[in-house]
Image (tube, rainbow, N blue to C red; front, side, top):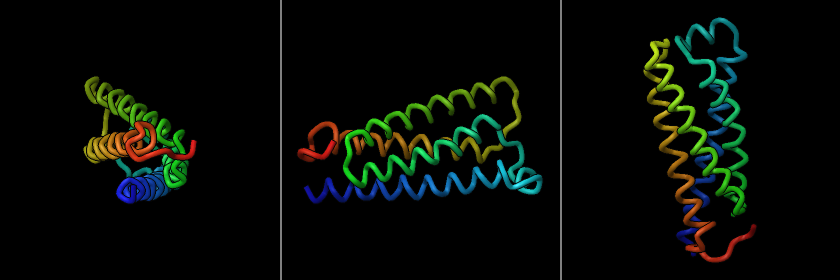
Length: 136
């Protein structure tokens, strides 16, 4: 049971930290003016807006996971799925010749990997019953 609790606490801290960094970085480009936008290079607006808004969901999911709420597992699954869909749409943008930064490819790969991992751990820990009965 301690191992399960540690795993949930770890992923919840990762989710909150990842969310706060995402909000800060996305907000800087969206609202930081021309200098911040120029520094971002060929960013893709729909990916930037998705990531910025998703940052708030990351924080909410992280708090829910810390509190061991079952709904947070579902939110983590939804975040992972939505991130994968946006990543696929970003791939279509690239395929059709749209401008992009290679760092966005790496960032979306990392986001997808992180959220699939968080969702899998949360699912196993809070929804499958592998870690005992938790608050709902």
